[in-house]
Length: 241
Image (cartoon, rainbow, N blue to C red; front, side, top):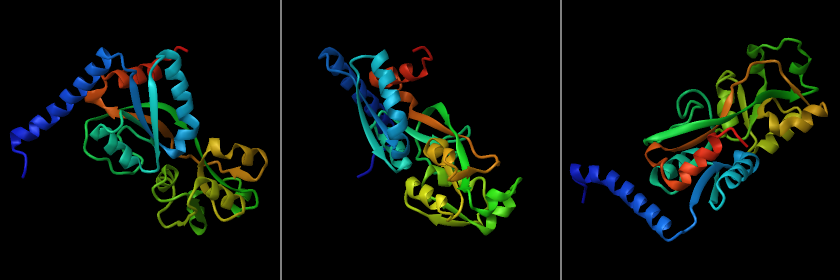
């Protein structure tokens, strides 16, 4: 069985009508508003607590349910299906997916919350660390150490180094950092993850331009007037404490 063209048009309306009916039931029954937020594990521990605290201070009574994942496409699919209300991921550029990942079809909107600085680093003993003005062409003889090919920092590195450069998959940001400290290669890592190693002189930041990742909040534009989503957007976009 397949939907007729009219049925396909009605499918979108049915989703909106069911969402509106659910919102109305919660309002009449005085049920606490719940916002469901999905996020990459990379940003969940560091960024989500600040967001939740900000929301609680400005919109008391809203319940936040978070779902960590390592799959940004799953976040977008869950937003599109209504399984979650909004999602947090790392991206760059003016279009969703500018980092280099595929985006499922959907009426998505987004807001960039803050920049996540990245640094290309090597061990202090690494040969490149001894060069006063390292050039990207010199990097090809070394390995790029990263988490996994789907990692945001790996995707960002793909946009700045040659595809001919060897990749070493460590399986996590923490392991990639540890291997880099031991001289296994160079790594593109977020500044928040390498503060201690830089201060201790275990890692050296190379003076090269790196991509500017953005912490991006994504939602469906046709659902942004739902109570939980609306309150979340107001709390985040309002610059006042």
